[in-house]
Length: 192
Ligand code: UDP
Image 1: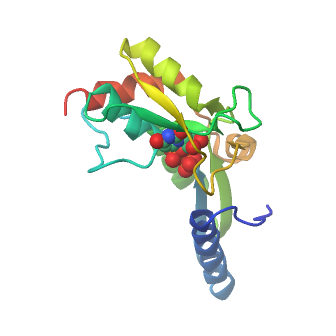
Image 2: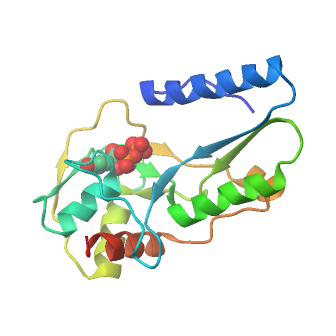
């Protein structure tokens, strides 16, 4: 699988770490290394008991929406509505954290011989910022005030996974949809 060029500094750190682990395997072929490429993890455990509540002003979309829904932040800034996407806002592959956790257990079960294995953990479906706002409002019956703001430097218009290799080799695919992700995100955060 080609690594290509990372499109921003964060992506480049991830590519470097993958390369270091590949070098480790090259130097000692007893290693069994699984590189799981996460797309955009969101949501919380469906019980509402385990989730993420970052301190301060979040950088990522879902934690920001959660704080706006709670009334802790007045409004969301949508970073650009002039991308070449279906509604002009950025498109990402959001994946429920529980599906991501299951992906790890599948990798541990299936990868049994030394080597370096690379898999994408995403749903393969892209949703725009406006899709997420609308879905969050609909499933949770809350309002997310927002304004259109300038693009954020380093952002891509669209980024989503091809998860077919993970399905084939790990017998894994994401089962939870965007409504589950929005519902579980709110279910956790509304009580903390
Ligand atoms: N985004 C946004 N407002 C925010 C945070 C994010 O419009 O306050 C957009 C961002 O431009 C991107 C998408 O939401 O299109 C996902 O951003 P996030 O930071 O969550 O993930 P990443 O950029 O790493 O894919």
